[in-house]
Amino acid sequence: MGAGNVSTDQSKEIRDETTPLLPVKAEEEGFHEFNGASFSGAVFNLSTTIVGAGIMALPASIKMLGLIPGLLMIVFVALLTEASIDMLVRCSHQGKITSYGWLMGEAYGQWGRIALQASVVINNIGVMIVYMIIIGDVLSGTTSDGIHHRGLLEGWFGSHLWNSRAVVLLVTTLLVFAPLVSFKRLDSLSYTSALSVALAVIFVVITAGIAIIKLIDGTVAMPKLFPEIDDLSSIWKLFTAVPVLVTAYICHYNVHSIDNEIEDRTQTQPIVRTSLALCSSVYIATSFFAYLLFGDGTLDDVLANFDSDLGIPFSSVFNDVVRVSYAAHVMLVFPIVFFALRLNLDGLLFPTSRHISHDNKRFAIITISLLVVIYTAAIFIPSIWDAFQFTGATAAVLIGFIFPAMVILRDPYGIATKRDKILAVTMIVLAVLSNSVALYSDAMNIFRKKEVA
Figure 1: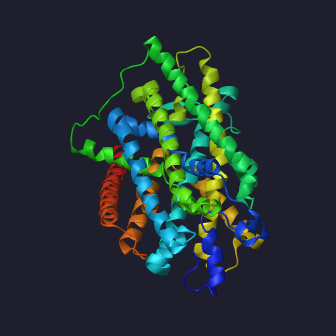
Figure 2 (figure 1 turned 90 degrees about the vertical axis):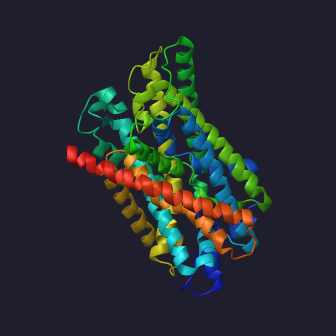
Figure 3 (figure 1 turned 30 degrees about the vertical axis):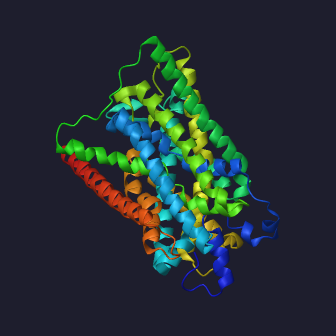
């Protein structure tokens, strides 16, 4: 991360080594006593980074694309993600690079590093906003197409000022997020991270169980296998699902910290493949069963669907368990993504200052400012779909596909094969085309809504 004005190689090495997520360990003596993360621990950490809010928007993508193309796209994006991470890891190992920012700096100089840091900041702020929106939807309810879906607190206690979205999110920010993001070491969050994955699995298992019961009873409608294409605008609309799929797999800013922690760095690529296979399985199961369960009534944030009668015994209990478990999961993943956000923002604003973990005033100001911005945005952004479309179409695509491909094309260490370069060009072309169309389609939809209003 430390290019440009950083005065010594040592300070550069410390900032670079710790850019993604682990700032304190490299600077403490205890770092040298660390014996290396286990294979399963590394898979778990990377999977936690991947499975976040994206899982909730995927069923809406399947509704738009149709069951077969939608599930194939989940697999295709996973394979592209694996290829892009492989590019980063091979270049980093060859050049003994310990962070994504440092790698971009080596390939494209100071501006390359700045572009990467800015993209991580934009992407992670988008993800954080989506997390808050999900929590607001679950606890306070959401309105879609004129239909109001009640939140948990509204269902239990009725509609009051104290359980409105603004108040509930403010309380969550002060009592849950503020304490969790105040830790300066990621180690402090290891137990909450483990719990968050367990809660996500509960959501998947219950959704699958309910869908299977209804399938056996014959009360599930035949899902749409392929998209409905009526005219040119319906084709453009399909592309708006792409950023949601891309955002669901963004974990690149965390790969180097996992790579730095393991003793045998040859294990990094198997760890990445295992983690992507695990997360793809979770994504496919959730998307398939949730779409099977709700069909064309699937909402942008599928959690909001769990407020109606599911047609099984104890339906309301299952609804509440699903929504509570996933809202809690999101609350516990929030600080992990926030950690990287704060670190990269600090690197952008204060590239030559001492590490943020040693400056309490700077740490507090950046943390509070970010929480205020994320909270305010979550109150005013209308739906999870809007947030994902715009962050996914810009920063996430840069982090996940365009920057890794650019590194391979620059090839600073002379390791790229002809196949690598062809894949890199293909990746850039696919990313730019699909996301340009998605942004155009989003913009047209917004203008149409304004005209109708």
